[in-house]
Length: 56
Image 1 (tube, rainbow, N blue to C red):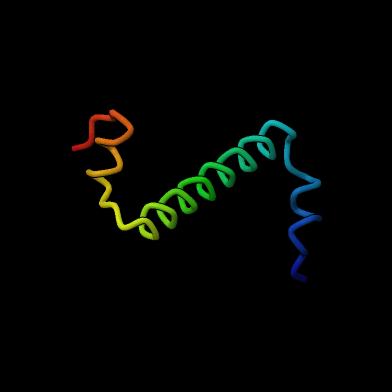
Image 2: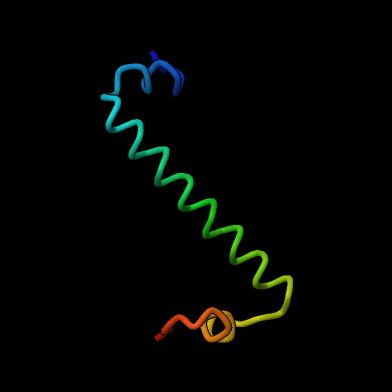
């Protein structure tokens, strides 16, 4: 019988839940940055240069 996510999450160790939440936040942050970058018409290289980040 299938279970919903909340039931599965309740059985997970708190550390594992915290890691999963952090990873989800990182993914969402990356997605938002990519969307913003595209909206302003910058390439990844241009954004990296503007932020003084080495980009390969």
